[in-house]
Length: 353
Image 1 (cartoon, helix red, strand yellow):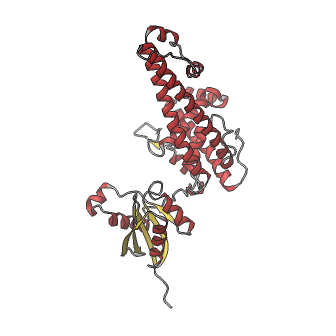
Image 2: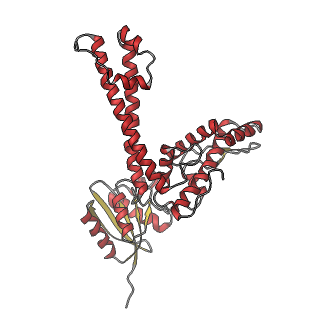
Image 3: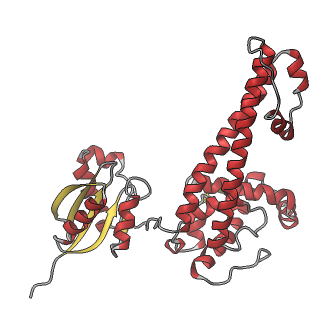
């Protein structure tokens, strides 16, 4: 009996419809069809792929956004998914732009070996961390906006109100929420006091929301990476970001060097002539790089080992930005050990390692 042909799928993801395409192992276009972004549509898409032969792999655009649920569904059904970047502008100018063209391009990129990235599974505790961090980040942004509005109102308030609140502290903001501004709203001083009271209540509510999110995140981070929060300079916010960057399947990162490259902490050669140096990496996950930057800043202030390293490298003539680059690389290596040890179940290294 003849064996079923082997095929490769390509999917261009969108909000309401996913465009799927199938090619064989020599690149011939076999079929293309659109499926709705519903559980029934996902099931029909998988059956449609199997109807053309043995599915080797599926290339997909937008595995972290429009295609997140479809990627989870295919992974659950033992279909290997490869993350595909959108075609560059030169290719789009040459081949045009449409959903079927993009779906075929995704499949062709996998066949040609241009797309090799393994997407995040997004089906475990790290996905829960990501969702909670979205809410926390918006609460922090709103709280910052609220305190700025309070300070702005104080600057333009009548003299009596301004002098009483000129050196406002966090404790006084909480007391402001319980103040009694008065009943004469036509008076500017009363109206300002009432506005400040309402803003103070908003500030207090947002602070409570952030504290609750931090408590929930700490539980999840401790469960997924027990030793991460014990590292010097690593807090709930930075640990959560680095955990999200690695994903539920950190084994997709081949080495700690690949994790450093993902976090934009890998050195980039910048030598010319008699100059031999490396520069900062301006690519990668900028939020992960920001987390490493925060950890390095804390360590430079409070960690004796880091202060000694900075002093030694400064005497060697290294610039501050180059010292930062080296320290970020060290932190990325240390964090990677804890992320992978948590995934494999092996005991993580000690913070002093």
